[in-house]
Length: 272
Ligand code: DC
Image 1: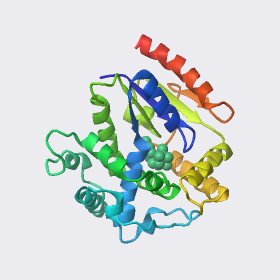
Image 2: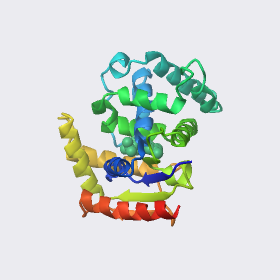
Image 3: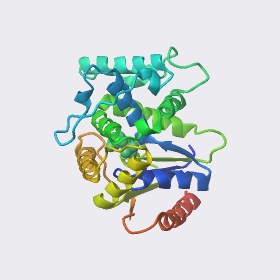
Image 4: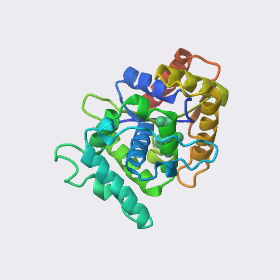
């Protein structure tokens, strides 16, 4: 298998930006695992009769997104089928193995693998929806389901197994990449930053996306409760151990973090 760089950490710690820059620098493919969880949340949000059930945190006001499925994604059937499976699985007390569905020939043309197909679907969802905090909260909620984690974990492994001939390896960011998805990753990094700094970053993103309803306070509270949920869930909680390099990005700029990580990864790749 080609080398894997795992980057974990809380929301808005800068891991997406860093993962993208590192992928480009090392000629690796980049996989944003959060966007897969977010795509799943969109499926539920749009297709569920009661979208508010996704947002079960008392401190966060549920605000269903007023969009139609056709606005979200062209692959209506795919989304509908996945959503049905999710519901069926819950109804059957979560005993279905999702991975047997994802590679089912009805879902994908034979020359396309499940991982790349699902990722391309996630990419079709507009960023202002996919990256919104409400969908982030939905992703965090849905991330507690063992079947969803099993499915997305198997997709990520499939992706890293064959990231494409042009790529020398894969950079993946998320919450459990180095602990659960790729415990033997070539290099594991945990990026973090003060909650206030992270909320300021997300507030700026929200304004850039044209979300005028977001306030700093609401974003701060959403991030706080999302971190708490991601770190306390029973399966694959966000955490790190002694195999990680921990970097706090609160007071250092992007270029400094990047330079530091490049030298660490260079060393690891050299010794791998
Ligand atoms: O990285 P992000 O903010 O886009 O992730 C959104 C949510 O998805 C996050 O709060 C929890 C969930 N997630 C997860 O449970 N495991 C991952 N590897 C990535 C994301």
